[in-house]
Length: 548
Figure 1 (cartoon, one colour):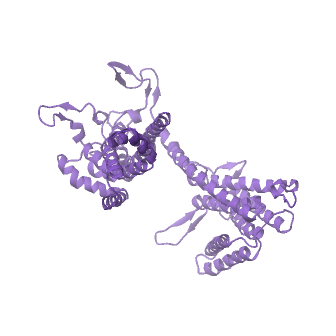
Figure 2 (cartoon, rainbow, N blue to C red; figure 1 turned 45 degrees about the vertical axis):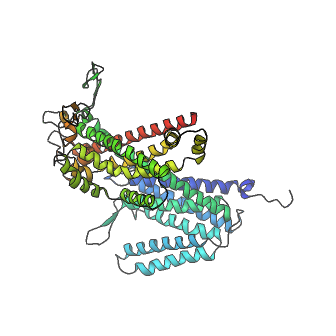
Figure 3 (cartoon, helix red, strand yellow; figure 1 turned 180 degrees about the vertical axis):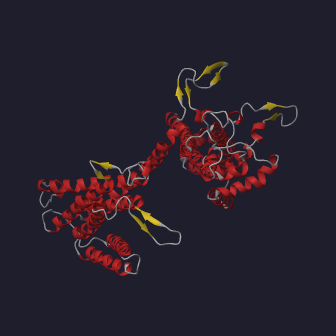
């Protein structure tokens, strides 16, 4: 076609620069991943990280040195891409300058970098201000006065080269510490500085390499934005898995302390009147606390946490869904619905300690004046109620009006339409709200500290037996359950007591730190189990909705 032009991506002689840019992007992403893992202690930086006795090394090269070499190579590659484009060796379409946002960002980065370098070199004197102004001004001029290919790559690549050089030469090593000189004796260590600097350099250099890969100009800026968005999304997911891995690595040893797998090794359970001895014994989750136990456990706390969440859900979900149905399907849009929206939004953002004080002053006196499982259930139920109402309303409003109109055209009453059409269609959204709420209330400490807890550690035979506690009586309300009116414990409170005071461990806990991490890991597993149940329920209702 006449007048058609070929982009750099389809030119044969542009394959090598593109490969260099692609490799630079890959290295930058890898450095970001390593930096995040280092912050969580999964990649060793100094000798004390993870309890090891030596630095993590590959082929005799320490982690800090390896990161420094990669940063220097990455920065040099990014600078080379920009210089190659400016000299015409790489065919690109750069803009006249790097852009306002990039210029200001580079100026800020270099101002901080120059100021920090001067503060460290001259031991905190006021030399940091002129040094930062000089480096920041130079970066500003470079980005604003040169073409985009140079203005985007030179400042970014230089940051990676400078930071990498400090790692490579040992200026910042595994034992490096910078005393900030505050009265609180604060200091920065290599354990934090090295990963944070690696992540920052990876973002800057990766963004510049992505712009070079796209040939600069509009396409290059789009490629750079895509990279930042993808890295951000991946980092969010990665941090979630790193948190789980971080807790699991430290919690599994304590969880499996004394665990055995053998016929009849576990406790005996009754199923349909038949007693069966489990072949697995995990004392940490099957025992309570007793002087006669070889291994202490957290069974009562697990049971208390489960019943807390179940009771809160049973209390809050019917009320929240019912109120949402009324406000959405029956109430006119006006001051009432606006007031309810403001109130529910305010309640959901209310600190948990306020709910705990409410339960302590209003609920506890009405249930015998002592802390109880029922008080904790209702307190957490009040915390869960606003979110259930908010998400249920949004889910009901998202149901298309065509569903209601079609049902009304068939002569179905409004109530039957709501019950058989609207609510089933909104159930996936309702379940999503319940999942989010459970994730909050399952880990709360302040409300249960004020309303439910009766002991830090209790024996296994004192675990709350809510189902077995029900009994019929001859007086109203004709049913009683002492278990609901008895104080118990829960995993969040037990973990809080372990960390803050270290109480309840006893002499037969060989490693208190492992016990604490194992408790945290079990709490995480309990919360994830509730998530799994909720996600399964949401998936079931979605499939049922599609097939019906």
